[in-house]
Length: 373
Image (cartoon, rainbow, N blue to C red; front, side, top):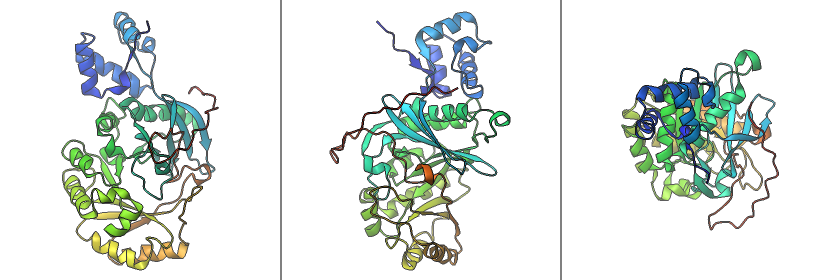
């Protein structure tokens, strides 16, 4: 009979210490040592943990493992962006590495598929399968760091920022999201600054309220429309939590944190002749007058079968300038990785649709697993 081993990537520091005390009869500092080996040195082999006594190493080999998602496919963009298909169980999720001049951002998935049905997002069209475990969320960061390697050897900038903007709605997976965020921030984990870890939500107020007072990270909100009528048409989540309720929750969270410096990032995808008129810009400015915000405009990234189009550059420019007249800080997101379908809204992955909304058959996965070096 095969013993099911405990994946140590499923624990934040508090959980790992408890496991070592309750299950292994070991002192907390041993858990801290293991955690440092895992995240500081990228080690998944207990035999290489030379400051751990042999007896404990042998015990760990019998009952535990360090198992991250592995790369089943990698696509490289001409702009340096890399999209990995990360194998979790018998499915793939997508993780995207986006290098820039002064940083490198990793876009991480929280679910296999998504249940929110945002009309402009390719991931939503695939349906929802399941939540990712802690090990499958933090494991994307761990695996990506291994794939990127050492800068002086690969020329690739190390990961400096993590954004929970991949497949899925993070706040519908709170049980696994919070420990994963804790590991990202922990000095024994990846040790990222709280301002360099961003959670994006489409408006799941119950999850955002749960975060308030419990975790301090940067917040980005997917708003995408200035009125409830329009937002409900393109984002059905608005029927559960309308804009006013959402923004009230946002203000509570921002006020409770240091990472956001008193303001939130508002993401607004521009859909040609849907939500990009000048009236929409003025309505958006009025809507956000009591919510300190930086507005990030995202020109729509087309995907096969999408009913929407990207606005012209002139429409994007007019929308931006109208908002700036109201003294908002406004940026237009530079499209990255669109030649490998890694841009915002294009993440699909190998998703088995278990919802009743579609009967599409999953094509047989013929990819050959490639072990990370």
